[in-house]
Length: 300
Image (cartoon, rainbow, N blue to C red; front, side, top):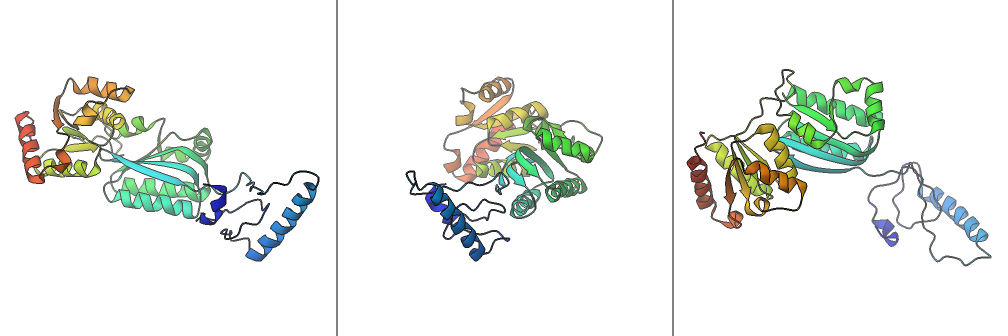
């Protein structure tokens, strides 16, 4: 964000050091506009006085203290039946919690299987931790599970100190957390009952949805993902009998995940989708794919 565009800031800072006046800046709840202008004016005057014998800068940049609010960034993707949610910033009561809660509510519509990547979370307050506890219980009540991964040492210490680590499944990495959903388990935490015979690996989420539901309606259990690292994780965890993959991902090279994926699929039956699959007539494309799956000998 450029210094000249502070008026575009949409979320207020809770604590900040008012070294200068910013027209149009959104103020926090503890600062009225008039009190902020008075404080800013006094501070700027004192700064100008101290610079009287030196070249005066045309712009005085803001200096925010460490406790300034850092918005929570939430990104998500699907790896098979699992929704992987990556959080970056502060998980605290307010707009940050609302953003995460809205995302989780939308994802739970498609199944109670969640992985929360917390490696980018710098601070969690009591309300934020309570939200994690609440959604962990919600997934368990729906016969699923919410797993945490990449938690910082500080958050890990908090979970141990509060003994809340006993209600969370915490893993070092996303791949370990995703794979755990497919491991045999007698604890009822959303493990061994998630199975699939076909893995579809294609970047387009719309093509994923089409292939998954079309083959599903014909009696096949299908997992889908849009990237090779997740594909490798699912292949090792689920051990599918057949892989449907887009032409570009099948030929991908140059990364560790791509090389590992290539080695794994070499021992499996592979159906490669043509480059223009997403643009073909849906009926023709679906019939051709279904015929290829049946020709592979995989029983529905």
